[in-house]
Image (cartoon, rainbow, N blue to C red; front, side, top):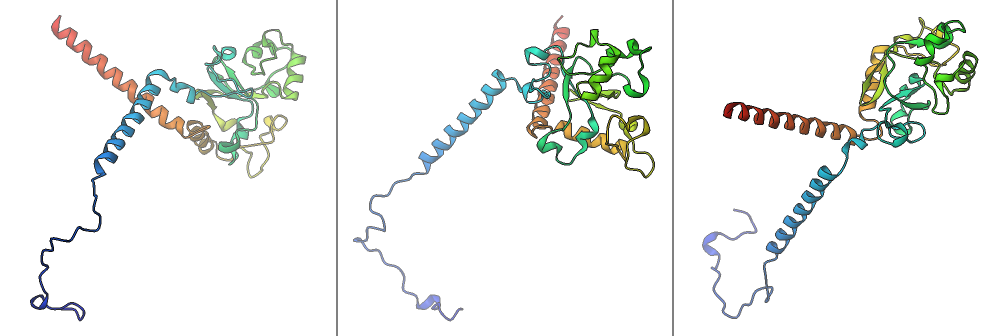
Length: 253
């Protein structure tokens, strides 16, 4: 037993006092009111979520945005151009890219480049016709009427990309094979063929590409990753429901 607690035998039992009214005379239970309010709050948030999923366009959160602010594949000016190309993708390897963006011109295109071309090294006045359609330029440049002299001028002024890489679309962003941009030996300079068009090079192309892919999936906001998961989930749900309906029809036929 403790020194401050009397033994059980010595404690006097509490006796009933008919005049005792308690600490609060008019007491009432408030738990039910707050429970109802909490349930109504959950219902309200559920309705907001349902309305957003049924009436909203979650693809807008994933659409890439070009240098002018147009959303590739969504805005009227680039409706037929759902993919985003970076003029010099090596600039996107900067640690601050996810925060401040990639410091290179970006345009929407109908398709990602299907082959790797370094225009300054491979293109000349005689074979220009074979490379014209592969060029990526700003929207004010008409590639169909472009001459070789204009192409050289626009590349030097940054209105056309100095090179294109064979690319695959990652969330509608063209991420290419970076081996062409690999640094030469221990030097920090760009490969000889690219030394006149970019001052950047890539030491580990495979790791750099993985980094770009990871940044593309989280570009602008990590909400994009969540939305992508939602889209995948609902797509799988629709496919399962379609399979069930088809199976039921085949059984009843």
